[in-house]
Image (cartoon, rainbow, N blue to C red; front, side, top):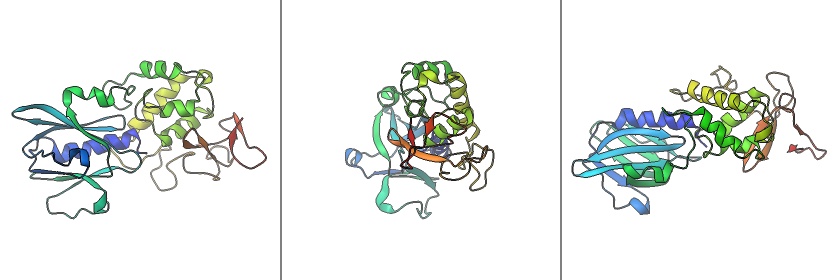
Amino acid sequence: MPEGDTVWNTARVLQRALAGARLTGSDFRVPQLAATDLTGWTVRESASRGKHLLLRLAATDAAPWTLHSHLRMDGAWRAYAPGERWTARPAHLIRVVLRSPAAVAVGYHLHELALVPTADEESLVGHLGPDLLGPDWDADEAVHRLAADPDRTIGEALLDQRNLAGVGNLYKCEVLFLRGVSPWTPVGAVPDLPGTVALAQRLLAANRGRWTQSTTGVLRRGGTSYVYGRRAQPCRRCGTSIRKEELGERVTYWCPACQPGVELPPNGQDRPR
């Protein structure tokens, strides 16, 4: 699933391509919006909230509306010049096309696509916790929400967008490695929860504006992460083999030496104690 910085970057792509432009055509390829025509509407701005994209629109004779989309695991937006070939994904994955005089925005495999009055955006994103990359980021509120369920594992709690919006599986694994915390640690037992939240925000913020995500400071392929995607490879700190196991509904990577609290049972599977 795209992380919050990827969604933030995508919002900026749409902002550069469409902001201030009057749409010359639209094509929705989902049943609930198939008859919708946004021709003549002006794109006010493109924004992100956690992992949600909000394209705000206005017309001269109507209240502003917002086109909402979620990328989930496989969604994407791409911007093309008029007449340029759309090469990012197969055509059957296209869900929406927005045309302007200077650009064409194509949304592939988008999820939760909805058009709502801008005044009602909270009905779609109001459940989210503080946005790590938002102008109203509130670290204290994020810590408060996490701490409200002290028995939940920290690995699951960080992925819950109701606690803080923007952390995905990559940053969950990397933050916990850098903090030396096992993903199976109950939230109430995490030694420095504010420090964990602060690190998550710093890592996402450091990767804004680029598509290569790195928590190590290295941008070359194979060197961008400490544990994520590195099962059975040596830990960059201690040389212990990186482990991989499911936690909740997501896989988790961790170093059993640097993040004590899990052990390898006799059957060879990585499981929590």
